[in-house]
Image 1: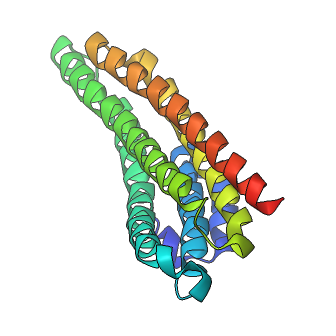
Image 2: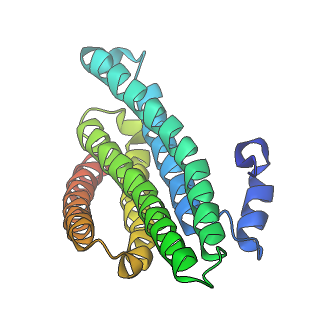
Length: 210
């Protein structure tokens, strides 16, 4: 497993651009989500300790702590996504010469496909939680840094939509139809709420900037 967070940013970008299978779209989306969180956390840190924002300081500290926890989650999900992808690729290599081997491979493949679907869903759920934080932060964060709350909103919603492409690519191969229905329903709900939160946050950001 590549220790991405021990590399330089340049090395991570170059590795992502290479022919190496990981980090791929899911992991890169999770990295972008972590950057979205960093922008929200920065707004919090530039609000905390300022006399002008004393009334909201306690709540902003809580939002900062929630955001830092999410950033940690996103970092863990980068590695989880890489591991699930590698597991899926290994499963495709299983033998299928006999009916018994084929049955065993099919069962392992179904499990691996679900694993490779669940991790992107976790990233998307985290992005939605981050968007809820930004939605609360936008009206109360330091006005001098509020454009960065907008950056967080754009990046979080974009990361959510991006990572869900990994759900889309796996779903057609999953045989469990009830699981597929539940996943697709949640996906649509995630996208709808994320878009609403992003637009509302950006409306507040633009108003405060103007």
